[in-house]
Structures are given as structure tokens and as C-alpha cells.
Image (cartoon, rainbow over all chains, first blue to last red):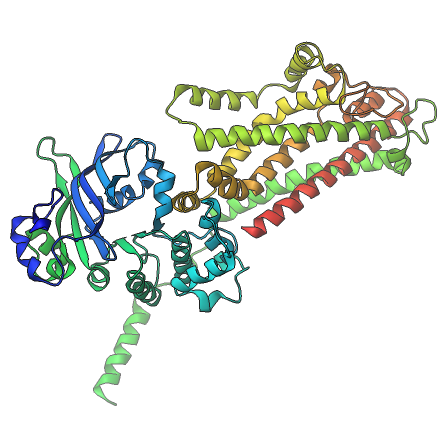
Length: 287
Length: 307
């Protein structure tokens, strides 16, 4: 099988049974492939040797206890770690086959194609319209009709009906859930092909969370979604694949570092995890 | 009576007997004292200012008329002598300060907050320099202005703009420090959101950081302009003439004077009429300052509402 001989295969031998399922154990058409991804913050080795591949038009969830490096990995995918002066990334992250950490790669070009939604809704203190139009404007996108683009982005984020009569109002007047959907609209307005979500519902109430989850299921048709979440039920509900990270001690020095423990189809991770640590975590015995 | 009501009654009785107390226990002496001290400080501050204003109003009362604003100074016709050249001079000087100190101060603050690597020793050295600069006596800036701005290398001569540049050096640290605080207060989540959408650093600074920092920058500007407008000593050194009976031709041409210099000129004369004039001059200065600051406060309110 070609997918088993793949160089980036992070899946141990025991998982080969899943190839008979509708979905392969590894995404056949990966948007991202990380190879020996290591991240350091100064002297701190935050993440060690992560090999992952993220499938096109799939939702991949990254779960694990605090400090396991799941957000760090997410931020490597659109080079947001570059904003932290002490951060250093080793290994490769290939995006459609191109290493985004390559020498001549402009991180701004990377971020134009890979959108991001943050933990706390962070709309700009501007009108709803200007929030959505911000990305296309700063990136110099050739837009024939900005009004249409704003409408389609807001529709895509399931917010249009709620805000169509107050596009000129300040976005800070929206509720938390609406703000977060506005942030999603803002991210998809630049027409990315990947949307990264860093605990997008952790500041929201259950109803707003449900709306975002429904939205994610819809967005999957057009976008590749990678979500970091603390909420295991959420990972189980929305994602196709789940990567479980954990904090480990390095054998040489005993320093703590984040590492990938297990990566598989979400059903597999939650129903019959291969690794004892995954089982302990999802059953609530640890973390 | 049922068994339960007996139990309930017992429970209520037990609560009454217990030592549970929710009433206030005496007066919170420390808290009240602290509050009183805070109030006293405010009252003292306001009282000093009010006394000052009341005193100059009382002293200047005979001469509080429009002539103050429209007439040239005179040492003969004291009943109509005014501050016109000084007012025009002060306006020229303050405009010069405004157009130089805001871009310089905000740029320096942006560099230190957004671009400088604080690990580097030279950036830390710059910070220490700026903080110490704020403590240099104004007369020292006057000497510097005389040596470098009025004379070579800039060699502007004793013109209003030379006074502006001297005062700019004086208040620059205030603007830098206030602007840095304002820039730091812009949430980093906005910077991240902007960068994540593919904006460059430059776009992020212009579209998010600066608009968000405007209210704080304006506060710093108000403070520094208020300081600059009352400065006398450095202006005397860089050539603000104490007695002119004509208007300055412009910021870069002709002799000039400023209101505090004019007040100084009146107040050292022995005759009572001059003292009255000086007191009235103080009020002219206050009026000008209030006008200037109200524009800044209006601007600040506008920007704060937007964000």
C-alpha cells in the first residue's frame, strides 16, 4: 500500500487494520506534512519530533493536556511562532509539498493562505464590515465587489442574517459567539484553503459552541480545518482525525517536552486507542 | 404537628443560637482613613490650583479686557498695553513643538515597543537615556539650543522655530514614555489577528497599533504641550526677546517673544500697573492652554469612542 510506505508515516504498525475502513489511517491527500518538527522557546524544548499529516477537507483535532505543545504545533503551520522572538523551529512543515520554513519563503504569503481563529474572539475595534474586509484589503486581493465578498464570508460563517442590518456597527457590540463567528468570517474572507483554530470555543457558552461546531462541519466542504481543543467531547464530535499529544520527560536530560503520542481516525482514538496514555487521557484518568 | 416541623423548628433554633454573624463588625478604620487621605490629596491639589487662579484673577482684574489679546505691549500706555505679539509668538512656538515632538516621540516609542530587541544592550541604553533625559533641568536644554540650534550647525538664528526645537528636546522624553505606555496597552491579540490575516508588520502597526494608541499618545501630548507652553528659561537663552512691538514674520523669520517671557518682563518692573498686567498675562496663558488642550481632549474622546 503506498500510504504505508510514505516517508512521513507517523502511524505505528498496529494501526494497519484501519486501511480497510472508508478512510485510510493516513490522509491520502495531505495539505500539510510535518517531518521531525521540533520547536524551542529559548532553551525550552517545547515540542519534540512531531510527524503528522493533515488531510484535505478534513477536520483534524489536536488534543492533550496543558503544556503538551498542541498549540505550538498549530502555530507552526502558519508561522505565527515567528512573532515570538525566542522561538526556533527545526524540521520541515510541507504545505502542498513546499517547505513553509524554506529559506526564501515569506511568512506573510504563508499566512495569506492559512487562516487562523484564536482562543478569545479578537475582532478589530472597527465596524463588522471593516473587520471582514481587513484581510482582502491588507493582502491587496483583487476584489471586484467588496460588498459581495463581505456578504459571502459572513454567510459562510453563518452570521450574515444576524448582522446584515448593522454592518457599519462596531464589532465589539456583538456577543462572544457572534464575535467568534465574525473572526471565522474574517479568516475565510481572504480565501484560504486551511483554517487553523486554537481552542475557538473555550471562551464561549454551550449554545455558541454548538453553533461554531455546526459551522465547522459545513466549512469542511471547502476548507481544511485543524483545531486545538481542550474539550475531548468536542474533538470526538467534530473531527475526522485526532492527534493526541502529551508531556514527556526527555530520556537524556529529564526535561519536560511535548510529543505526539498517537494519531489516528477520531473513532479509533476514542473507541480503541492503541496507546495506554491515550486511553488514560480520554477516559479521564489523567490530564 | 408533624415530626418534620419539629425538626425544622429545632434547626431554626440551632441557627439562632449559633455564632453565625453577618452584621458589620465596627468601623473599618484603616479603610476609612485611606479614603480620607486620598480625598485630602485631591482637595489639596485642586485648592492650590484654585488659589493660584483666584489670585491672578484678583490681581489682574483691572486689566482683564480684550486689549490684552489685541494690543501690542507698551511701557507708556499701560491701560491698553496687551500681549498680542507674545500670543502670536507662543502659538508659533507651540505649533513648531507639536509638528516636531509628535512624529519624533511616537516614532521613537514605536521603535522601542515594536521593533527593538530589548535583549540588546544598546536598546536598553536608549531606554535609560530617555528616562534620564526627562530629569534634565530646562535651562540645560536652553544652552544646548543656543549652541546647536540658534548657532551652528543648525544656525537658525533667534527665531520662533529655534525656540520650538529647544522645547521639543525638553518634552520629547514625556511624549516617548507616554506613547510607549499607550502602544503597550494595545492588546497583542489584535496584532496577532492582523498578522494571521497576512498583514505585514508595517500594516499592522499603521492599521492596528497606532489607531489603538492614539488616545494615550494624545494624553502624553497634552501633558508635554502644557509643560512647554509655560517654559521661560530656555526661551530666554535661545533669544525670545522680552520686548517686541511687532508680530513675528513667521516661525523661521524675525524676532519673537512668548507669553511667559513677556510676563517675566512685566513682573520684574517696579510699578504696580506692570504687576497687574503680568497677572492678567497669566490668565491669557491659561486661556490659551485650555483652548489647546480642549482640542486634544476632543480628539481623544473621538478616538476612544471608535475603539
